[in-house]
Length: 101
Length: 280
Image (spheres, chains in turn blue, cyan):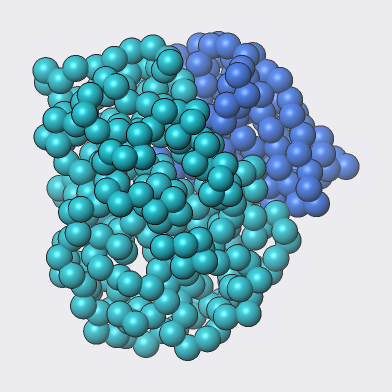
């Protein structure tokens, strides 16, 4: 399913049925308890290097498929908002990150 | 070629988007982003449905490109302003593609859709109705497109730039991390390739870094020999189109090719050398 594109759908790609072997990092961005729809989530590796970016979904959500290790999720939103959250990922796990901006 | 020949900023687009002879085009991986709101007057191109052959792994041919642009109402003389998501990743790919078929006046909106959104500029849902044109393309300019045999021959001779993330370069990830990690082919990179992730050429807001910063990035830091020809690749040739744009259009390097077969082709070839691990 991945060889036909490199696209980053809003909110991130859907969880595949066989997600059991994936190291998933996902979450939701909120402001005062309300989903932030306009913004971007970036995934940086433990050296601070950019790895991926998705536009936030309609529910403020994002999802990445990482590898085992420590990662940083950086959320960008209008008004110069830039918020970092550290997260660890491992195969077979879904790591949830809630980000309030 | 200078920056002003190939890039425009948002204020320019706001001032000129309704000018006759200017066509603003959003290029995204799916049309959901465009359909949810786009720059007023912009039309859309779908990088996959519109620009890829539906059967073979290749681009639409010259006649197909002519039919597409004619149908979308783009003329040979029009100035085409491309923008898209992902730091203009797909827009840069479309830019390279327009150049491949000989379109003269094409530019990128610096920062693309992301900066436009983060600056809270207006997005509309109205879809413009452009009258049909009769577009004429040239044959593909293969001076900017690399194929697998010349890539293998370039090992140790030309600059090879792998623009994927460090984790993909090393073989730890097989796809960008916004996609599920499942692939049939081998991981790693082409021997002697330098890893300069495409994203290093862009600021967080998606705009391109300055020429000085870019020269330092590819030259002093990555060790590219600006006196040699260069081939850029990634996974399917889109992120490397972004790097092709930087090297060929912004830094004015004369001989730069984008290898659109990229890792999904190279990593599946039988018998070619592969290197693993991080770059130096």
